[in-house]
Amino acid sequence: MSPRADARANRDALLRGASALFASEGADVPLDKVARAAGVSIATLYRHFPNREALVAAAYAQEIEALGEVPDDGSGSVALARWLLRFVEFARTKRALGDLLHAPGADHPPARGVITDALDRILARGVADGTLRDDRDADDVIALLAGLWTLPDDDSWPERADRLAGFVLDGLTVPSRPVSS
Picture 1 (cartoon, rainbow, N blue to C red):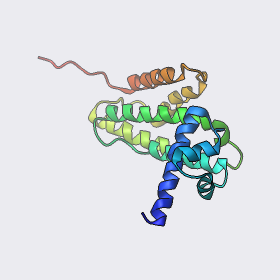
Picture 2 (picture 1 turned 120 degrees about the vertical axis):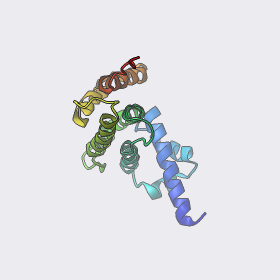
Picture 3 (picture 1 turned 180 degrees about the horizontal axis):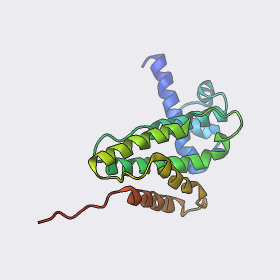
């Protein structure tokens, strides 16, 4: 592996490890634990990310990038269901990173634009294939999903978040009509 490829692999491993640990333990997880989870030294972590805020911003940017990807296969309603699962996982991670993400000077991508674009594409596909309602837009969906951040931060969060995402999906999906004989 070339030094460049090795450095890229180390950075990717650090971001994967950081995202997982931030989600499970919070953004104040010791950075040496992040380095160990990635299988690299603390010096390698600092070569890629000069401080905790830089690591958090990079992990957040990676999560936002994933939210911009629209599942290719299936109907619009199937794509929306898959995307909502990804969004709930993002909300779980972002919840843990919230304080650092909104700190003054935090450098993070324009999440709302990425999310709106993905939802617009999913909703358009669902309207075109008849699986999603045509009287809702991305801003409506985002407003509904904002409720995830109002849930109490306790053991019930994952189940309640999944249930709320299900309500959103149910509200957007066109009911199946029985086939006439």
